[in-house]
Amino acid sequence: MTTGAAQPERAIDPTSFAVFRFLSRSIDDSGRVELRYALDDDLQFTEVLELPVAAPLDDARRESVEPLLALLHWVAGVSYYKVAAPPSLEFAGGAPPPAAAALLRALYRDGLGEFAYTAGLQAPCEPSFAVGGAPGAARSWPAAPERVLVPVGGGKDSAVAIEIVRRAAQEPVLFSVGSAPAIERTVRAAGLPWLVATRALDASLAELNAHGAYNGHVPVTAIVACTALLTASLRGLDAVALANERSASHGSLRWHGVEINHQFSKGREAEVLLRAAAAEAGAPEPFSVLRQASELAVARAFSRLGVYHGAFTSCNAIFRRDPSLRASSWCCSCPKCRFVFLALAPFSEPEDLAGIFGRDLLADGDQTEAFALLTATGGHKPFECVGEEQESIAALRLLAADPRWRDHVVVRELTHEVLAAVPGDAGDPAAVLALAGEHDVPAQIAAAAREVLGA
Image 1 (cartoon, one colour):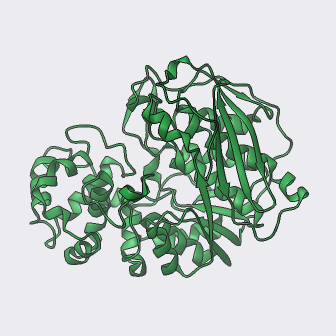
Image 2 (cartoon, helix red, strand yellow):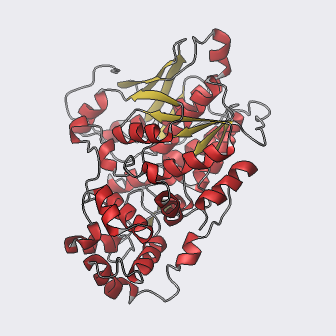
Image 3 (spheres, helix red, strand yellow):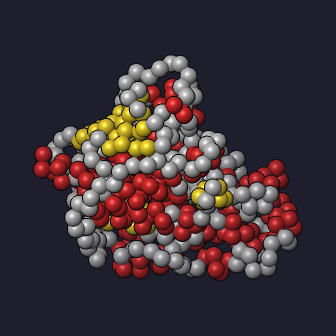
């Protein structure tokens, strides 16, 4: 759908670039967004999004969302900045105001921490950039939002978030960037209105990656959240209810003073920064309805939502950019598949869970070592959307005491190898399943969250 300027077919040296530039952005009356970037004056990129607007946008409406369009422009830039990760950023349309600047500083450093670590950079990315002035009074949000947009990724977390919002808001509306099969199945199971945006990365990225560009993980949840906020604003909605649990706030390791967290943009720190930037931009209110819950508590709640059991998929193989590599269900061999199976098992019958995944992962002795890594035994927690080590230990404790599961080969071996080696108070199931921690969920939705996520 979109291509940037012709890119050189020769090998590129990422270290030769000095500046990443935010050139321009636009939104037309049909909701088509173009975001333009450049590395120095050599490489240019254009990203295109199509937003689901209800009617043609007039000039006044487009002008009203310009601060939020700017925020999306700056946040989505991580996908192109990482081609070379130069030491500075420049903004042709004016420097970001303070709250947006704080969010960008975190996303381009901590949000790209895994990228910098795995790409072999010498240190985390910390590009310098100017900060603009405050735009005025931040937006205030309603105490009881009624028209709430719920982003859907097709996994268990978004299904639980849907049911929480359904109980508390008069007009829940589902939203996704793209329409992968698991998203479509989840939406059908929910039976609620659905808005779909599309995002097309600049086509030159693949060629640049093949010719020496840096590549790696980006904080994509932040991009989706900003797209959802812009869509919600254009549709006159009150809030965006994200499905980010408390476990996302914990990373895998520390490197040069930065916690390397695959899920940084899903974590509490990023949420607080996003809320401030959203208020500054006059956006609807963003919050995570699952913030107080562990992944294990979310799995327990999901186990009671049978309508979604044949719909969801949390395997990230389905989100690979090459459609020919996308799975329609579960690969059963990645850390995400293992963790979701482990988290659901204490609350599921073995035959039911095997029916969802297509096989019983805890009966496969060849996967024992990989399951052990989820408890950080033999290495750090995988760079994936998986829960804390304490959650995996708690799940294992529950399974070791469960006659339905305790004789499965993986459970039996990890009971001897992991549970025998950790302190007796590690992974206490009651503590892991309890709702705890700071959150910004409005009161009536927080009450629904306690109902859905409780024992």
